[in-house]
Length: 147
Image 1 (cartoon, helix red, strand yellow):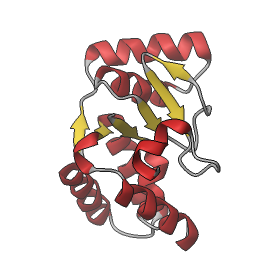
Image 2 (image 1 turned 180 degrees about the vertical axis):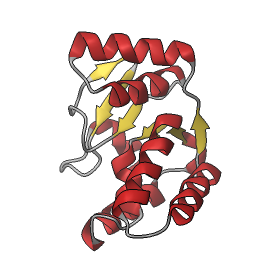
Image 3 (image 1 turned 180 degrees about the horizontal axis):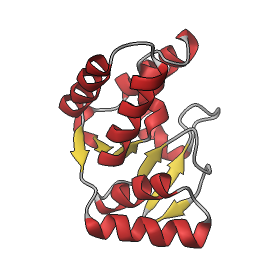
Image 4 (image 1 turned 60 degrees about the vertical axis):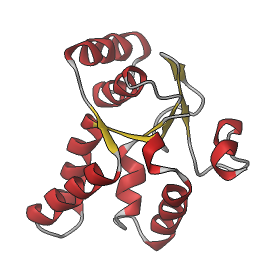
């Protein structure tokens, strides 16, 4: 099963929101086999934006962090088709456009899960289910990694 990561998971892993969140995200990411993880291109842009504005570090550091995640996980491109699907999704379900684009990219990449603490838990679209990986008990689809 392939999974996509939302921005907040990587922001936590970078330690921006504190040690507790960093540890939770690091534990999660270490349990996921890297070849099964996709990094939606819109996440890379959001991550750079958050890291360059909220981390207190340089833009160069933020750029390096994003590039490092690209090496760790296979990027999933934002195609015109995915963007159009995201716009449709945003219009029909009142989802913020970049969240909708991330979900559309995950669907286009063949992901079964989008790991996110921000999007509506359990929302399913295009074969992708949004799962908060930090809830207890864990979503049944995550048992493959934590079971």
